[in-house]
Image (cartoon, rainbow, N blue to C red):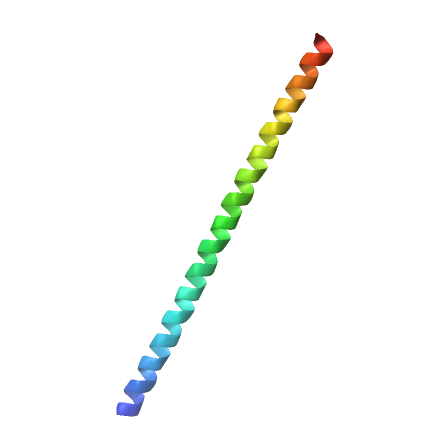
Length: 60
């Protein structure tokens, strides 16, 4: 009986560690996606401003 309890505790600890690992991986992935999205939006904004400046220089 004691051995079964020890094994169950070990299994629970293993599962808990696996959950923490997956949670951390997911959090890191989301941060990376948010960073990449912000970078893409910034690049898009800069490109739009450059295009607008180019159009104004052609018209002027």
